Amino acid sequence: MRGVFYRDGIGNIDMVWGNEKAGLQHIINKHIEEADDFNSVEEAMQVINDTINNGTISQQGTNISLDYNGYRVSIAQSKEGNWVLTAFDKTRSRAEKQRNKGNATRGDQSVSDMENGTLVSPQLASSESKDTQTSTNEQTIGEKIAQAEAETDTEPTEAQKEAGNYKKGHVKIDGFDVTIENPKGSVRSGKDADGTPWSVTMNNTYGYIRGTEGVDGDHIDVFLSDDPTQGNVYVIDQVNEDGSFDEHKAMYGFKSALAAKRAYLANYSPGWNGLGTITKVITEELQKWVSSRPRKT
Image 1 (cartoon, rainbow, N blue to C red):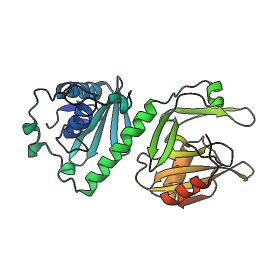
Image 2: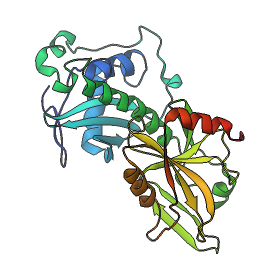
Image 3: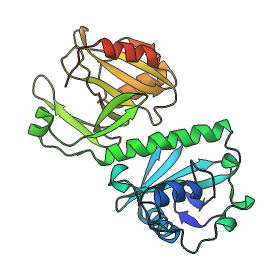
């Protein structure tokens, strides 16, 4: 189904058959038969069409996400064109959407027609393709992060922020339990030591690693790249105005120290001078470091 959808600023969007990880086959298996995001292929196609036509657009790495009425549609962009990766209800958890077998239907769509070769994107032609494995892995984490972001209260009161008792999303990345405080695109605000208010729009999703305790007595903070499963982990020694050590900030999933530095600074107001030493660590080293820290509940 070439060019079955269209959106200004994106162009024609294909619905490919794909495989179990992305495309229509993925949507049928994971979001119709296993979960009750949709009751049929027809319903899924209608929701996808409505979301593409009316949804709010955001960039998720090399992919595009559109959100509308609680649903998210993710679109992959490539030289061959745009195609639907997945679509799902982002307002409920996976457990809430588990379906009893036999309660879903594929509707009147012909699966054999959808499986013909003309519907398969070059990226999905082989399940052994490295590019395909990367894309599908990205989307798996992307769905989880999107759900955690949707569960986060982005407008807590000052009292709630101070007490830390507002609703936050949670996602597991490489074995780390990450709590989302500020989704990408949300506004993070507070007051300086002298009481001067500040605010900044987040260029990266921000939160902390649950159960850990940093030098400042709080959890260890973390900034997530658009795809935390790719790239390296860097730990920044944030410093005070006098150059003394303040706290650690983990930069998760960045291709280089320069990319991590730029991302860090992009999440602070212009003129911020808290950037100290940056150290690259492998996941195993981070796990050992986190495990050695005092546990915080």
